[in-house]
Image (cartoon, rainbow, N blue to C red; front, side, top):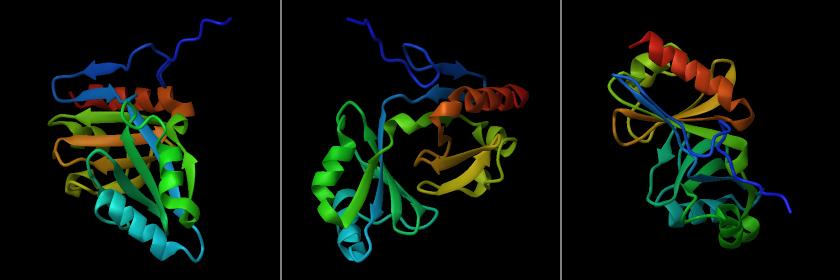
Length: 187
C-alpha cells in the first residue's frame, strides 16, 4: 500500500507563511470551494437558496462574507461558495443536496490556491500586480483580475488590511513568486 501524504498547493506539508515588515502572505489551505450556477428556468429558486444560505445573493463585484459560508459573484447567475474545509469537507455535495435541480454545483477546492495578504502594505503590493483598484475596495468587494498573467479573484475581507487572492492551483508557485516579489519590492 502506498504511503500518500496530502500537500498544499505549494507542495509542502503545511501552509506556507511569509512575513515582511508591512505584510504577511499566508497560503490558506483550509478553504473548501464549490461553484454554483443557476439552471435555466430555476434562477428564482437558486436566488432563494442563496439568500437562505448566505443571507443575501452576491451581486456583481461583491461577496457576501457570511459565517461560516461565504460567496462571491463570478458571472451572471454564477457564484463561488467557500467555507472552512474542517467543518465543510463535503461542501459541493452538501450544496447539491440543498439546491437540488435549481443549480449546477461543481467541486472547486482542488482547482484553486488561496493566499491571504494581510497588513498595512497590501495595497502597495497589489498595485504592482494587477489593475484592480484595490485602494478603493471595501469589505465585501470582489473583483476578477489578472495577477502576473493569471486569472484571479481578489476579495476584500471585512478587515481593511486583509485581501484574499484566489488563483489557479496549477500555477500556485508562479502566483506565490509574484506576490513575494511584489512584497519584497515594496518593503
